[in-house]
Image (cartoon, rainbow, N blue to C red; front, side, top):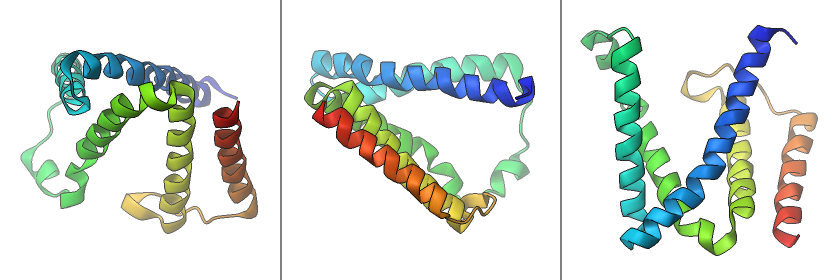
Length: 149
């Protein structure tokens, strides 16, 4: 595997650590603030400040026409993240981080297979195959084993 192929995989692997750390950290915020929604709000406010700082320091500025030409649903990504963060802050202390993350991954795989199969949201179409379905089933089996263990 070339470094060009390896770098994105390593970055995603490390980002996975952050997802696992995010749930218990936000659960602490939820306990202290009395609300998983407040925890998500604080998490997003801190994340927004961090992203804004990095963007201002490093990125080029889009034109209004490039953003204006997007379909309405392109603006919904933050809602998906907000729902995940609030649900994770609520669920982590109740079901444990390992169960939370494996169930999240199972949900991601199911949705990802559908998105790929349909070529939805501008993705390249990648039809379902028996091997891809088997991979998803193994992930679902992993959810069961982690939860039972």
